[in-house]
Image (cartoon, rainbow over all chains, first blue to last red; front, side):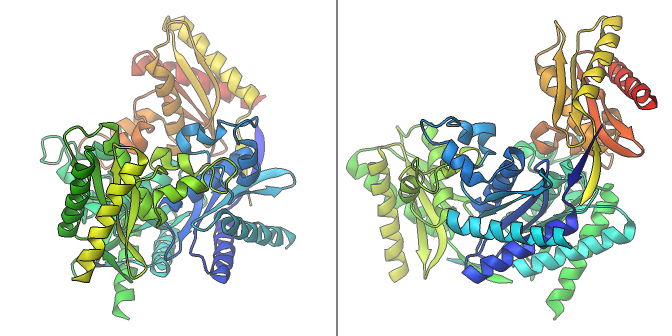
Length: 142
Length: 142
Length: 142
Length: 142
């Protein structure tokens, strides 16, 4: 038997709020998804003006970050034509998403969940994902 | 051009909270989804202990209620073998969900969104969906 | 509650007619799709000779233009290898389509629908989509 | 943060072996799937003669048992026409499988994984799944 740590529902809601706050600051309505360590959705918000295709993309970025255990923008680099992971970008019928904006949530080296943001530019999405990750770090300090 | 009314993000979050409160009262951890009038997800929470298949089922109940403009349990009756809608229960690759727990949110005769609940028995799911609908009615009174 | 504007059925039929007229002029039988602001199909025509895979592609171009709120050919540029949206081109199991020929329909800054054309070259598809957008502008002037 | 227990890879292999042994005894070549508590595959064997559609069905039975936290044959009863869960049987695009042969693996009230068997009659599938569950109980006694 393995013991694993998993983000809980309360933490997930706090992380959505942290990403939403940053989205409001930069003035970009976002789709915000938080998943557990197995990539299953814990909490989600689409802000007014968030794009409809971004609902799934936000979830897929979070799923990908949880599973690959690294930010999705790093996978983008590794999945370019000629790079070793080229082809990964179309795996799982599109569930794998390599666009920036997905970031894992790590505790003591273990991924316990992930956040995925979509609707802005990848840079804006990453900024809001980073805000959630920073909020998570503060949560752990308590 | 048509003018339509759509549930907003803030209202969606309040409705998730109302369903969650009832779920806590009856002691059943739920997956709670709120969608707009087009069936697109606005807000979602999986309470600790909510079932993983219920993530999609909650969303599908909400989608179905928004699109069919009636509670999913009414579709269950109509979709029984020998009944006129038999077959609807498998439409759209399973996105149509006729199990009780999906309820439309109606303003002046127009569907503006829907709520979908899953993880308990259909009766428990319906109870929490009804709590969200009741909270919506109160919101409209303000 | 949000109030949104949505293309109506009558307008959608007029836009299909406008795209069809241009397709006849350039002698390329097309698949023509018009969707609402949520990406749902309002009107569709496959002209005699329109390609069968283009039925879905036209719908997907229109869905993508409505959701991304920009022409699909712009997404093609942004989704090239090395560009920030590389990976978007395979999102949503292929529903996202970045090939030229999808264009949003905008009223006062808001997307109210979109048109998607497929069967010709992307340049031909764009030409017919542009004809529909031009017809929409004339409709609005009335 | 939540702490959860998850079946490990070694245990999964032992459970496959237990199901396989029973399959040999009853002379029915089986597809045998063992998943973790989130429904993800840990170990799988298709015995010579195992049916090809049963590869997916065995996985889906195990996924369903892990998520619903009960044997799939109980869901079959609850999903009959006229029963409250009618409609569940087609959820998630078919990933939910209510045919007997899926059984959860439970430790102290928590589901830590599940087993799914397919290729025989549902009664034969259940028998082999039960053999895996019995082997799991013995593992825990050590």
